[in-house]
Image 1 (cartoon, helix red, strand yellow):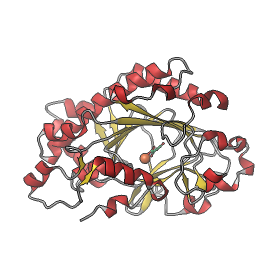
Image 2 (cartoon, helix red, strand yellow; image 1 turned 30 degrees about the vertical axis):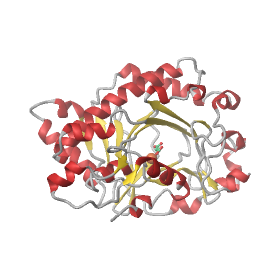
Image 3 (cartoon, rainbow, N blue to C red; image 1 turned 90 degrees about the horizontal axis):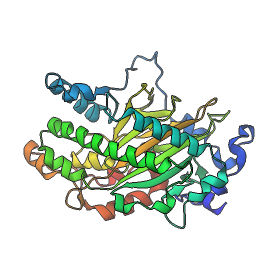
Image 4 (cartoon, rainbow, N blue to C red; image 1 turned 180 degrees about the vertical axis):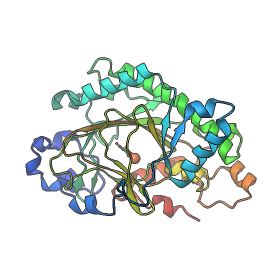
Length: 354
Ligand SMILES: O=C(O)CCC(=O)C(=O)O
Ligand SMILES: [Fe+2]
């Protein structure tokens, strides 16, 4: 209970009651009706409705189509901060294996999942429920560092299902190359050398959050994932099933992301926002819960920094003749402040503005 009242604590899953299955009796600590209702959700028949941009990796790779698709990629990052990526080239078998293992893990009894429960002050493991203003998210999650390999904490990598580790390892390797591919086109769009942007990301930490949002018969009362911007460089999200729920803020309204079959959802994080001097936008998003169906996602967060600093890319400032719009801050300090501010998961980027 203490954990539930703390403003920014990661709460161990074993403190959550079995109310997940009995949604008629939702404990008070999950009730967040005001937050769910906050803001207008854009409907498909609204005037301002238009589809989330789709970027096609096959077109990026095609010498004849690459230039126009690169413009599309740039425009998505500048104007939306989000896009769906089709023909991404991640091996289908690797994706299926990842989906199967993720779904199987969440299907296990609580005791089995708690074999890799969060320990002490750590952030890795199973059981995260970010609480805010004494409220909890309607979700169970596993968070793990996936790259570089020597940073992995294998004690917290599930061994049940037995193929989970292998699936995660392969998926992580595939997404690392995918992110490199994407960054080379982002560099072209930004007008900077490929090496400058790749160096900011390569060898940096990658972590994954695997979320399960159980169905809730009263979805207007609970929040799957509190509105936030992502704190690292780039985020790649895999829908394990086709249940919608992700919404991104656009023009002051919540815009529901409709998962395209076979696509990955990519979004700009705060560090890439700063690295591009605000050209690429890190935008707020949240997850609402579905009344009928559970929802599972596997999210890759790729960290980035420039010579140990979170800072606008010097080459970009030089080429564009721009003054920095964000204060430079050492990466370790950035992470410390950014992730201790989970209780107020918005506003940090603003505080770095010059
Ligand atoms: O599960 C989702 O759709 C989004 C998760 C998310 O935003 C996050 O983990 O940062
Ligand atoms: Fe996020």
